[in-house]
Length: 339
Ligand code: TXA
Ligand code: MG
Image (cartoon, rainbow, N blue to C red):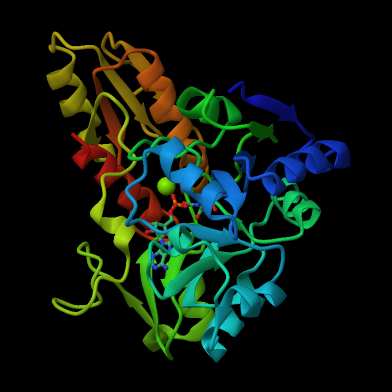
């Protein structure tokens, strides 16, 4: 299959391109599209064969459910049922935006979307191309990140093509993603919400919206406590790993780490915001300027560029775990544990 690239203006996407992409979705094809977080790989959420195609194209484990994308908060009640007041509050406050709400699933979705669970994750993406596509299609679109399973998420169309060219019908190229890490996933079925994955809506923003006592993090095991049911199946699987090794370096540790690794016979790269001005000879260097949100925006692209340059070992700078820094560190730890 030849993958068709539909290039669009991210702010004012051409309705003909959106119409073409929507027709492909309606025909059961897979279409990658930009969101504010990362690129998604979309399929008609009610078409079982199309949804099965997502799992095949990505090589995704069948027990890892997909996020259903909708155009507005009003659609939450059609994809989910028994929606809690808390979930309604969060949808009103943060949609469109990088927050996925896990709620009880309404009937009608392809069973593979929820991986057989009774719950479904739903979000409205904050991107003119994603919203335009959802409106043109007129239905719910199941979309995981548009990468091969276990790899860094794509924030550019070129990264989608590197993983999925020839395996999907089309990609809408709307330029680089603005947030750069995926949506925050919260279980919002009860009176308190469980944060299943850190992401674009920060813990501080959630606490500000619903109060400290209503926000509970979930441990590395994907459980709300030491026992209890697994709330987030995705946490069990390998994630975000480029082909080379990733080694985390605190900003103050750069001089020591660079001295140590520059002796290595491997092709060593460095990625960070606080790299010393004078560097030893390295195979690849990614200097990121700006604050932590800017780092989040550029992180996955920088990991993939270093990989493409043939880096064996990539030294990656850590950030403080506040705000979006929590999501950045979650991704970096998983990338570092990947091999
Ligand atoms: O920003 C994002 O969320 C991007 C864009 C494309 O929207 N999508 C994305 O999807 O990151 P994916 O499939 O890469 O990650 C979805 C996460 C997984 O960790 C999955 O396990 C979790 O959401 N998830 C989905 N449905 C769930 C459910 N019913 N219960 C618990 N976790 C769920
Ligand atoms: Mg993913």
